[in-house]
Length: 432
Image (cartoon, rainbow, N blue to C red; front, side, top):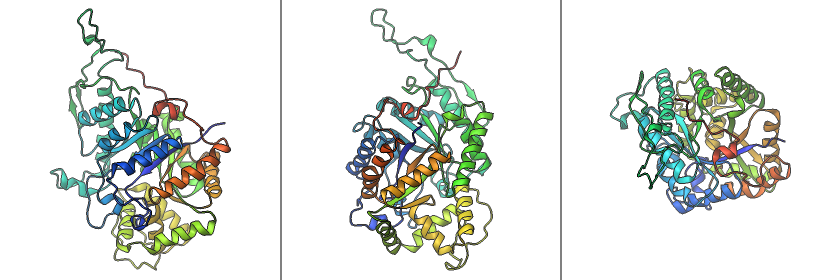
């Protein structure tokens, strides 16, 4: 029987926009000891990976969990020292970075962790970031995805700068490296010119695991060609099945084995002893919510400032978004299907950053995950707790055992690398 994969998406004090106000929510999202607690909890729950998103801008109206946060690659290097199995995933922008730098950073993390690194490739969801990098505008959507495709190609070439075992350290012969097994990339492309080689040996996983989350045509094409985990946003079972089937077909057309791509939608569970208890927790979060921050979250996901629209009117018809297209399409479709007001959609998006909510008892949450997994709508899930640490502790302590009892999730790790957990092959070094 196949088993699902689980990741935890850690975002500041929690994914709900008002989570930081809860008495048992951690008070400082930059406190390493609290982040170590989450990582150890995920490892205790036998999760595949822990994932940290990132952005390169901030401001007074952004989601509180995104206002200030640690740089994720620095953080994951520290977490590698206090964990032994959990995969370590970070977002890094292909728009505001250079391939040589990022290839070196992720190779270093993979070495430090013994083969547990993963890179969430993004092209930049927030145009404001451009002003922090001596640019006066955010590149157009098509250009960002074209340059990201080349960026990943260069990074993979750099990871293959050295064949496995090229650093021989033969003291008898006085030879540190077999330089015949070192390769100069000498890449000259449309966007990048990178000579190489990389000054770090081939990573333990060959290449760190690649994650991608695009849902536009360009995003799905990129995911089908490079992604080993696809972080999806879906609200409807049939739409999720169609999305996964489409990605798998695109992967096959790209010459890839679709089983080597794991589709993992985001899910935010709110768990109570009873369904009424869980709903009361959600109602409490809504009651504490800052309306401006909540509307900012929805505006970002729909790609347009919504502050001038009446909250108790219908969700307006908006032009297609060039930013978070997956969120925009999914949330708009859900609002129309359920005849939601703008206020109702705002409150929903504020709870889980636009991802699927599961509210109920541990059994109800497990049922919701099992239904999608068995139906072929997902290979696993990225769990997005409303607050930390309590909501995540509840999931690991009460939902994971149910999934394990049903044979849907592992009871222990059977390997040490993230590729082992995901059942992904280690990329072979290219034939020269």
